[in-house]
Amino acid sequence: MTGKAPDTPIAMEGPVLLFGGPYSNLNATQALLREARRLGIPPGRTICTGDVVAYCGRPAETVGAIRAAGIHVVMGNCEESLGWESPDCGCGFAEGTACERMAVEWYAYANRAISPDDRAWMRGLPRRIDIALGGRRLAVVHGSVGRINRFVFASSPEELKRAEIDLAGTDGVVGGHCGLPFTQTPGGRLWHNPGAIGLPANDGTPRAWFSLLTPLRGGLRVEHRALDYDHAGEARAMRRANLAGGYADALESGLWPSCGVLPPGEAARRSKPLTPETVRWTPSAGRRPPSSIPVRGISAARLTAGSPGHPVKGHKPPATNKLIRF
Image (cartoon, rainbow, N blue to C red; front, side, top):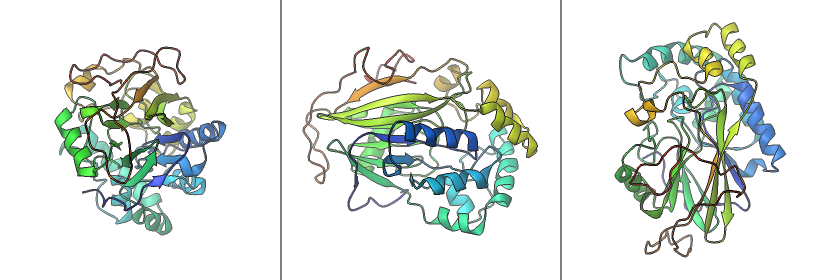
């Protein structure tokens, strides 16, 4: 497992800001932190799902910005690998793929840039953070509850997500790693990926993605939000660092240099712009919630158009999920 369940979740009142994958992208990281301040969300209610360091050109500076912000950070596979000086990033890329070949370059660059003090910080990060929000308990992990570098996509089997939430023993799971934002309610529980800020979502736009979780009576409001930042400046920083491969171009084009990790459904949506959306989640009736978080069970419902947080159309959901976007 990616981490033992904490005995007590961190109680959070008010909106929680979630984001994944800063990926050594300093401009995006600084823009996200400014947005948190603009929204009035303190560091204690801001959570990163890991991979602070990865593809882009300013690993040490990005770690410095995250550490100085004092936010919650879950250990990602990159923190695990860099913290213990592993020979590769541990991303889970298939052998011989373009993703694996490009990872050799950026991981070597990051490995040279990270200080011993930053490695010690990475080793000390939790593999799982549990939060109590709106009467619900959520486990925040990097990839999945069972494996730190498991890719869980919107199109991944519902049975996998149900099993992972069962393994967590919570009302839902917040996970990152795959880099694409989506929200689903397998079995009436929550699986949520806030997306990544360090690379675009392969949708043909340079925007990054994060999310807000706001407690409501009986449930949560989940908002997927886009983040604009100086992507061109970050691409220039990558080229100055001689990291001029496909990822520098991706910051500007909004398209990943390789789609080898993507299932067919996600690969087919390449270059189709995502749209921000808001959903309302309440656990389904009939399920016994974790005993540490007393809840009432009621059915899931969508927020109507005109609700806060840009509730507009996204991609058509699979038939097996009543609630999914992106």
